[in-house]
Image 1 (cartoon, helix red, strand yellow):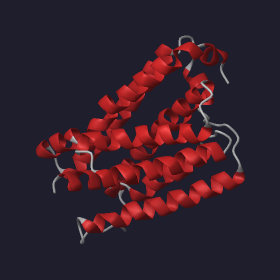
Image 2 (cartoon, helix red, strand yellow):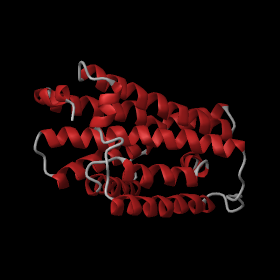
Image 3 (cartoon, one colour):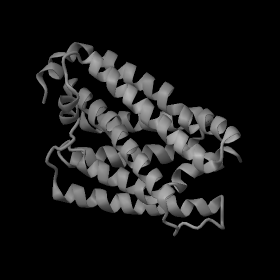
Image 4 (cartoon, helix red, strand yellow):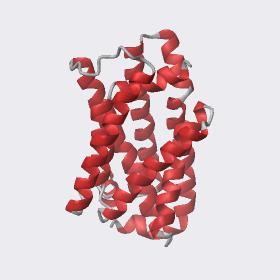
Amino acid sequence: MNNTLVLNRNNIWSRLGIVTLLLLLLVGPNFGPIPEMLHQRLSLETSVIGMLVSFWIGFCIIIAVILRLSGGVTLRELLQYTGLGVRSKLSANLTGLVVGILWGVLLLTSIFQFDPDANIAVINGYRILVAIIAATGALLEDVITRGYLMNEMQQLSVPNWAQALISAAIFALYHTVWAGFDIFAFIFSIVYGLILAGLFLWGNRSLTPVILGHSIAVLIGEPFASMLIFLSASL
């Protein structure tokens, strides 16, 4: 664990507040106004790429702000602090893989609620590109919402269960607040956030099982998972 991050303990609450606010302001709009704006001007396929790039930009800005607030910490040190590359339990990794596959299949089949004629079996360059962009974006998200937030709370002696709950609540909030705050979507996001936070704790604070449970789901479900955001917004 990086000493600079630990020594900045007095500023943790302010850092947590700033990062949470940035998630709401920079990432949250991708679940509401940004897809709507893009879809008014572009095709659905192009809009999906635009939204995913917007996710990427938001997460990268937040990581840059974290580095700035943590003064003297390099990107490599930050990633190590958040659990990227940390050794994990095999049982947690296997569970993460199962979660990722099941969640990905759920995302994939959910498209039929909106588009019964969708061909989810098609594999082409566009689908591969979108899946890669989305999966790496999910990794950046896990670095922030699981690794960084939860490890910062650990420095404040926040119990593990509370770390998981707060992280999941923040995750669910920025996923739903800009989309009209549907209570069912919020609960759905809370559950998934708790699963990912649980994998993080189970895996000895390694992001490996979290990535398996999140990025694998995205790899399987894209581009249809992103299209659901556009299609649900049009209802």
